[in-house]
Amino acid sequence: MNKLIAQTCPPIHIQLFLLIKQLITNNLYTMFNKETYINRRKKLIADVGNGIILFLGNNESPMNYADNTFHFRQDSTFLYFFGQKHPNLAAILDTESGEVTVYGDDYTIDDVVWMGVQPTISNRAESCGVNNTASTSKLSEDISKANNLGRKIHFLPPYRPENKIKLFDFLGIAPSRQQNASSLELVQAVIAQRNYKTAEEVSEIEKAVDVTADMHIAGMKMLRPGMRESELAAEMERIAMAAGGNISFPVIATINGQTLHNHYHGNHSELGKMFLLDCGAETEMGYAGDMSSTFPVDRTFTDRQKEIYQVALNSHEAAINMLKPGVPFKEVYYESAREILRGLGELGFFKGNVDEAVAEGVHAMFFPCGLGHMMGLDVHDMEDLGEQYVGYDNQPKSTQFGAKSLRLGRKLEPGFVLTIEPGIYFIPDLIDKWRADKKFMNFLNYDKLEEYKDFGGCRNEEDFLITDDGYKLLGKPIPKTIKDVEAHRNY
Image 1 (cartoon, rainbow, N blue to C red):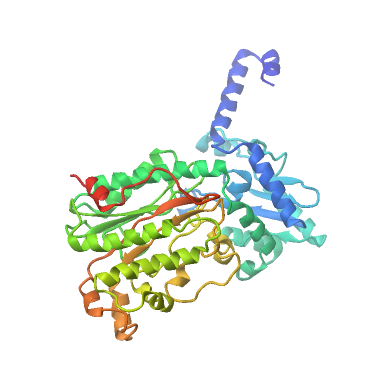
Image 2 (cartoon, one colour):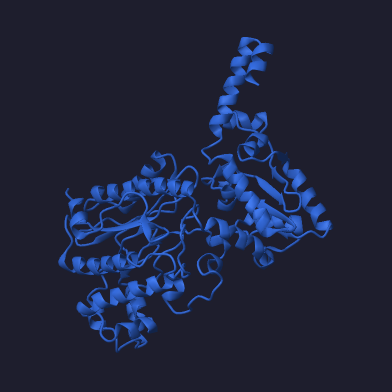
C-alpha cells in the first residue's frame, strides 16, 4: 500500500499520509495480538450457541457538564473481547453466521481540532480482527431486525445508567427489569473464559502488581508524622499514572484502618497510630493490581501494635499455605479466621473453643469481611456479572455476618488470580452494639476490647495465581514482616 502511494503521490502528500498513519497507529493503545480476541469471540459464540450477542461499551460520563468528563474506563468485558478503550462503541456477535460487527461513529473535523487525528472505527475494528463495522444509527436497526425475527438477544446485566437507557430504547425493557432479563447463558459463558487467566494475561497482571508494589514501598518510606493522608494518596496516584496506567480503584490511605473502605484523606498522621494503605495500579490494557500494607507512623511498631499485627500476619500466611487446586476458598477463609481467634485468645480478647466460635461467627468482631476476591480486568473481577456466579459457581453463599462478605468461596482451579487479605479491625460501633446486645459474652472479653477502641485496624494483601500444583505470588513482594516494615520506616 505504501509503495503504491509512493508511485502515485507527490512527496509532500506521502509525508502527510505517513504522518496521519503514524498518529492513528499511536492512538491505538496497547493490545494483545488480534488472534487473541478472535479466538475469545469464537469460543463465546460456540458456548452461547443461539441468537445474537449484544455488547455495549461504555460512554464518557460527565462530572458536572457534558464536556467535562470523568476519566474514561471501558467496560471490562468489552475490553476482553475487543481490546478497544474508545468510548461509544457497541458490537453484535451473530451465533449462527459467526459474523461480528463493531458499531461506532468516526470523528469529524470538529472533534479532530480538539482531540487530534484519531483512528477510524474501521481501524479500531481491524486491530482486534473484526472486518464489519457500522454506524451507531445502524445498531438500533439491526437489533430491531433480530427482535422481529424472534431471535434471542443476549446482553449482560448493565451497570451504567446510559446503557440501561439504550437497552430500554432498543428492547423496551425497563431499567428495573434489565437485571433479570439479562442472559444467564452469556454471563456464564463470559465467566467461563475470564475466570481462567492465560499466560499473556498473567504477564500483564504482573506488570500491574509490580507498579502496585512500588506504590506501597514508596508509601512506607514517605510517611512522616503530621503528614496529611491526602499527600500519601496523591503520591500513589502519581506512581500509577507515571507508569503509563492509572489506579485500579480509589486509594485507601488512612490512620483509621478500622473503616474497611475508607476513602477520606483529610486526617493527619499521628504518632502512636498505624497507617493502612490499600491501593493498586491498572495497566494501560486495563489489568489490575491490588495490595494492602500497614505500617506505623512512628519508626517502629509499639508493643501492642506488634502483637496484633503479628496475629493478622500469621492468618495471612496460614491462608497462603492452603492455596492449591481443589481447595474450597471458603475453607481457606475459615482457617484464616481460626488463626485470628487463636492468636487473639493468647492475648486475652477471646476464650473458648475456636472451632465452635468460628462456626457461630464470633471472629466477625475482628474480621467482619472476606478473605479475598478474583482479580483481572476488574480489581474485583466480574463483580458486575454476579458474585454468585463468579465466586461461588452458582452455589449458595453464607448469610452470616462476616462470612456473607466473602466474595470468593468456590473450589480453586489453575488459572484463577485472587487476593489474600485477612485483617484485624477494632470497630468501636460494632463493639458497643454487640456488648449492648450481650452477644457472644461466653467468647469475647469486652473489657479488653474497650481498651482497644482507639487501635484502628491492620491488614496485608498480596495477589496470587493458582497453578497446577499450588500457587505463585504475582509481582515483586512488598515488606510484610515486622522487621522488614520497620526497615522501610528509617526516616
